[in-house]
Image 1 (cartoon, rainbow, N blue to C red):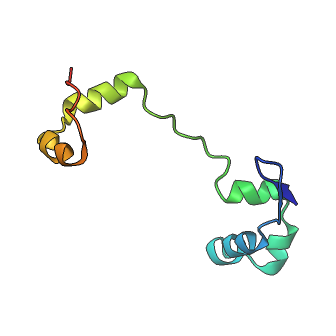
Image 2: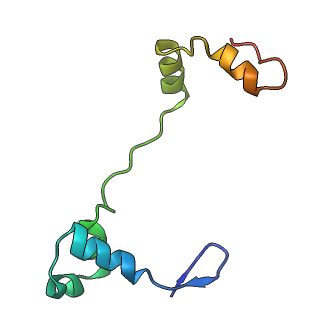
Amino acid sequence: MRHDRAGASAPFPWDVVMHVGFSLLRLSSRDLWALTPVEFLLMTGAARPREMAAGRAELDALMRAFPDVGVGAAMSDLHPGPLPARG
């Protein structure tokens, strides 16, 4: 049994494991059931490095390179009050 963040137990997702193992990884029954949990996770890409989110400097550079032109008119339809000044 697994536990969620609230501490409630949830059944192990065997259907997901079998789908990934048989359909996506194309493993035989013998090979799938011989894997350790760590080996299975490595095969599914769980160990690949995660990309870092853009920092403030990168976000500012993207906003300068790709300004939102004409968005003010479209947003005024959705926003009930005046839009904040851009700076």
